[in-house]
Each structure stands twice: as structure tokens, then as C-alpha cells.
Length: 443
Image (cartoon, rainbow, N blue to C red; front, side, top):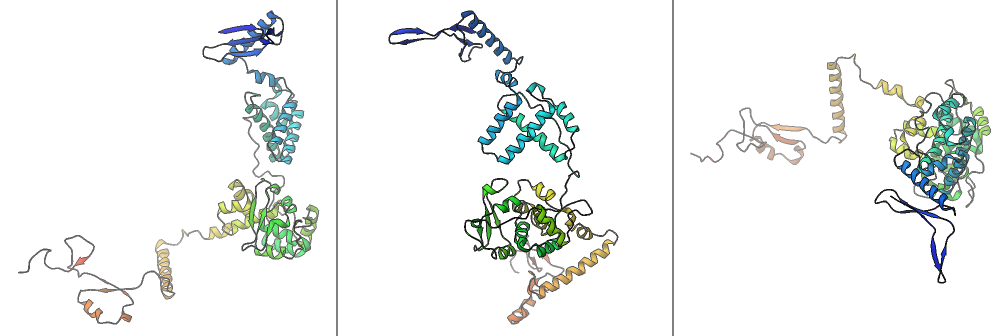
């Protein structure tokens, strides 16, 4: 072990200058680099004590008896300051401002209501007790947990704490407990809504065919539309989408027709206004569409996006394709959350199941008759790949066939060997009539 204190020396204008404050050098294990640290004192005895204390703490850190210096320093800083550093980091890397604002608000509330001022105050038990007192929706509770976990994960990544104290807390079950369960519109409801919408018709129609969200529709520019392309589409800019990714969305012919009716000015917005909730409520009332049905599920503007997801499923769209059309990152979100199962033809699928009460013979006969009828129909329509086969019993029949004109040879000809036929000595697939063995000379 190397353990020494000294005052640095330097030469200036031919003279040696000695610093007033001491520095220390130490190396605990053989092979380690020599560490040089400032001791911030002009007293030799204090400098020696400080260096010995630093080395002692380093040895305890190496064997796990003491937390690293960075963690001990972070433990003395308030969680509020840690949160501010975290927020600044999120803003620096370009996270969405709304996301950052919501996260900061949720974490600040938890720190305040749980009484967490420093890291030593944080515990999973105190969070569970706070959660038990809340009347928030399960989904919202899980968002609070996710937000504060994100803070502690960041602190762990930057060596401000050893481990996340909330890592093992389970999320609240949300299945069937949504505060505002949403449903999709039926086709008849969409038709009635468009009939009473007036100038808002084109907005509703665009939303139900593209799945664009309310904010995305508000930011949609005329320059984003490409109505004269061979396949009209809209180029949704990354700055306007929820996931900050550019999206190319094909436009339905109905949407193209309605968009062409608008006074589109280059550089302007496509829609002058996008209906707010109060306007939509009045349109729903005029269309005779209940906002909340008998099952307690409601419809709103975002239900138009759910309608697109459900219509894709009803059209038999492959799940992976539907996921891209909905611009989702998880297929489960497309197939579960954004597909209204109450509108799927589940009953029709049940009726198509096979019967177990009819005898197999009866089913077999029915299948055989249907197959025969279908085959005859395909032959008449020229869709059958095989043609009727005419069998020739003996080789002499070929001579008769050769004398026939081509019109009589519409059917394919195959030969069959008489019952006393044998396989050839070469063991190929052609049956031969009885005769001398291969290689035998005539007598």
C-alpha cells in the first residue's frame, strides 16, 4: 500500500514555488493506478488524517461495507433536486414537453403526499399505503407508479442509488375496471352522424378512415395532402404525431372526394376547426346516438379511432397490417384495446362449426355429393385442371385411336394392363403385357 501526503512544487522563472495546500497519493492494491487527490488543507496532520479516512472508506467500499461516495453524496441531496436534474435531462434529450410535464406533476405529488424528502425516506410500504387511500382509476394509479419508478431508474443508472426501492411493487389490475370504457361506432351510427354533421362531416369521415387523433387533425396542413397522386395519401409530419414519427396514410376514395370540396389554401390548415366534445355531443344527440349504451360504454371523438380498428378486424385485415394502419407499437393494443369485440361476428363463427349430431356417413355422403357437383361445375366453366380420362384395355386399341381425328381426342388417354399383366424387369412404373423376358432371343 502507498499512502503519502505532499505539497506540490513547480518552477517559475528559475525559482521553486511550493503550494500551501496538501495533496495525497495512495494505492491500496498492487497493480492499481496511483490516485492523486486534493486534501484542501494547509495543516499536515489534518491532511494525513483526511487521506487515511479516504483510504479507509475506499477499503470498506471494496468489501461492500460502505456505499460508494457518489451514492453517499446523493443521499444527502433532496429528492426534489434529483427530480429537477432528471427533468432537465429529459428536456435535453428531446422528450415530449407534455410527457415531461405530466411526469414531473405526478412525481411531485407522490413526494409530497408520501413525505419523501430524501432517499432514506423512500420505501415500497409507504407507497402501497398511499395507493390504498387513493380513489383514482387503476390505470391512473399505474401511471403514478411508472413515473416515480422512472425517476429512480434514472438515479440508479447514474449511480445516485444502489437499487430502485419500488422495483417489486405490482401494478393494479385494470381489466374490466376502466372508469370510462369506450366502444366503437356501428356503421349505421356513422352514417347518421355524417348526415347531421354539416361542415364537420369531412372531419369525422377523415378521422374514421385514417385513425388520426384530435390533435393530429388540428395540426394537419394542406401541404401534407397528396390528393393528385395515383394512390392519394396524407403525409403526417413527425412533429404532429403522438409518437413523433412520420406516417404515410392512404386515403379512402370517400375521404378524397370530401377533401376536394374544401377551400384548400397552400400553407394553411386542412380543417378550420375540429369539433370539441360539446359540439360532438350535440351532433350525437341530433343523430340519435346515445353517448353511453346499456353496457355502460361511451362514445366520443377518440371512438372514431376505435371504429377504424374494429372495421379493420371485420374486413379480415391481417393483424400485422392492422397494427401498421393504426400506427401502434404493440399488436395487443390493436387487437384488444382498439377492437370492439361486441361488433365482431362471433355468432357467425359459432354457426360454422361442424355438427356432432349427424352421423359421419351422412356427412360423408353430403361432402361427396357437394364435391362431385363442384367438380362438374368447374369442368363446365373451364376451371378444372384435370380432364376426363379414357382407358384403353389393350395395346391394339391404339391403332383404332390413331385412325380417329383430333377432335375425338379431347380426353387424355392412358392404358391399363390386363389382369394378367406383370411389372417390367426394370421395375419402372409402366405395366407391360406378358411376353419374352428382356434379353431373350426368339426361338
